[in-house]
Length: 149
Image (cartoon, rainbow, N blue to C red; front, side, top):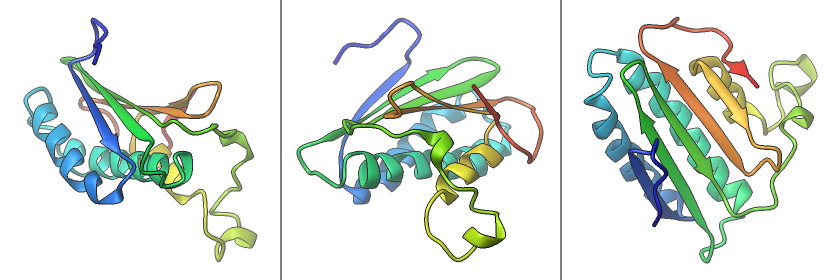
């Protein structure tokens, strides 16, 4: 497994939702060394990473046991960046319906990405739509909308 110079941790996970909790706990332990006093890491980042992993496994890889999810974590003094890649065809995040619109309140879908955008400082998708980048800055806001590029 090749690591880029700015990557501190790389995980390859099976497309099995039972692997999510253990992977998230492991990443949080590693990130705690950098952002040990940031309580948003233990709530906001945990929820965002859990949602990204479950989306990659359930929707991106369609729960295919032969497909993997790659997690790349970059730890910096001021932030944690994680990229979650799946082996699926990808999707266009701009086509997701707004889960807060009255006509969508009863419909499933889009809530995980909505949560990621609310809890994290940045949420970006690659052009193909099979990789999401999540960024949590140290000492930033409590809640709001994460920036999207």
